[in-house]
Length: 283
Ligand code: PMP
Image 1 (cartoon, rainbow, N blue to C red):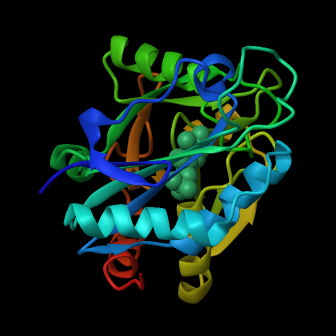
Image 2: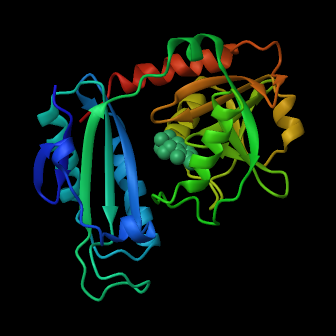
Image 3: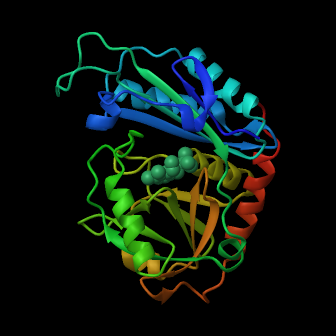
């Protein structure tokens, strides 16, 4: 099955797609993105991703981009690829213009879609859980906008790998536990879950909101509130959520075991429920 790119109206093999060097995404990080998962030839939660994309575009005062046009580009590239279990990446930059910080007077947003085989989580990470380190959150104050400016996330992930663990969790200067490098974070304390509220300091994940919905149906209380590192370390369960992460158990943080160091029952149950939903979706 071919891995494809959509570039301003044309679909081509991914390695043939080129963007101009004066694309503002390339020079200023002036671009937003979404990452949507395909399961069994269908895209999961596409409309929620398009809602968040509109939020990002509006927050950055982008020129109008047609939601229908973006939806068609995503679906058409995904269908043409024939890849059933896909990772669909969508990026929209403010456009191509001579380098100047100010917005160009006339620029056409550049739309790029790529479709690749999804990165499946290694089975041992699912079975045994992952270990993480905590890092200081040095990101800007608008993490609710899904921009391509991901250098703090890149450095945090790299630090985790160089420390011999799988991922990192951001903690603010004031000690508030935020989220993972490409995922949201939940903890279980006795009979309820805690997760960071949807403020500008985190990205409000689509998976996070699906999980909160599932918990509602299952009678599991989720409190969206701030909590600190001590609360995190003394939790009964910790897990990450995201489009590519799905639900991933965390069993050690900064070298300290969480509970008995095994993936917990609530985590595993929620992972199964999410999997069910992902496999019975619409587009
Ligand atoms: N937070 C960050 C920083 C992310 O990069 C992601 C993944 N895009 C998430 C949370 C999870 O969001 P979603 O569930 O929509 O993939």
